[in-house]
Length: 316
Ligand SMILES: *[C@@H]1O[C@H](CO)[C@@H](O)[C@H](O)[C@H]1NC(C)=O
Ligand SMILES: *[C@@H]1O[C@H](CO)[C@@H](O)[C@H](O)[C@H]1NC(C)=O
Ligand SMILES: *[C@@H]1O[C@H](CO)[C@@H](O)[C@H](O)[C@H]1NC(C)=O
Image (cartoon, rainbow, N blue to C red):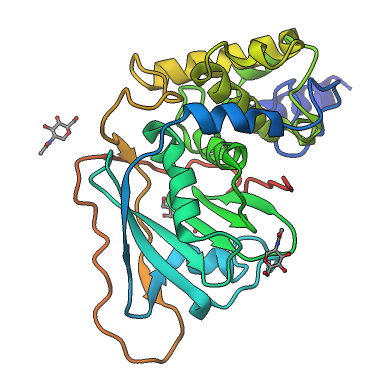
C-alpha cells in the first residue's frame, strides 16, 4: 500500500503531472459569457490598423515544405487532402518586418490572397511574428487549425477573431510567454480557478482553446476604446484569465504589450522558414527560392512543444 503510493508519487513527479486539468484532453465545463465571439469582430476590425504589404509570387514549382505537409494531410493523419499543384505561393512583405512570410493560397479558395494578407496584417506584429506560414483553402465549411506554428484556414472569411484565435495558439504553445506553455502552467490554472466562467462554448473544449479564446477577448480589450466591458456586461466572470494574458503579453513585449500594434516598429522574432520543395515530383524547374533569414531576428525554437497540432476544431 505505502509502496504503491510512493511509486505513484514518483511517477507523477517524473512525468510532471499536476492537479490541473490536461490542457489538451480535458473538457472544461463552465457557464459561458456569450454564445460565440462574433460580436468582437466589429470593434477589432475598426480599431486594429492594417499593415501595408506587397506580394511577390513564387513561379517555379516550389512550395514551402510545411505547407505541403499540412495540405496533404501529414499534419493531421490524412484529414486534409489538397493537390499541391493547385496552390500559389506568395512572399508577403509587411512594412514592419524585413523578412517576408510565405503564404500558400489555393487557387479556388473562398478568399482572395489580399483578403487573407490584409486580415493577417491587422494582427499586431508581435503576434504575427509567431506564425510561420498562412495557408488558405476552399471548403464547404469554415474551420481552421494551427500546427507547429503554421495556420490553415478552410473557407477563410472576413473573420479577424479566427485569425487572432489561431495565432493565439502559437503564442501559447511555442513560447511567446514566460510561462511556456501558458495553458500548461500552474499560473494559468490558478487564475482560471478564481473565475467562474469561460468566454464561449468553444472555450469549454479544453484549456488550450480557452487560452486562445481568452486571447481574442484580450486583444479586443486592449485595442477597442472602452474595452471588453463596453460590449459585455458579464465580463467579470473571466476577469482573472484576461488579466493574466494581458500581464504575460506586457512582460513578453518588454514594456509594450505584444497584443497592441505599433509599439515595435519591426519584428523581433520569427519562426524559421521551411525548406522549398517541389510541388510535384517530376517537372523540370530552376533553383529553389532562397529562404534564408536576412534580417536580425531571434529564431523561435518550436522543438520544446508538446503537441504539434493545436487540435483546433473551431468552425463558422
Ligand atoms: C467556398 O467556395 C465553394 C466553391 O465556390 C462553395 O461551394 C462553398 O460553399 C464555399 N464555402 C463556404 C463556407 O462558403
Ligand atoms: C542583432 O541584434 C542583436 C540583439 O538585438 C544586436 O546585439 C546586434 O547588434 C544586431 N546585429 C546587427 C548586425 O544588427
Ligand atoms: C516544426 O518546426 C520546426 C522548425 O521551427 C522544424 O524543425 C520541425 O521539423 C517541425 N516539426 C515537424 C513535426 O515537422
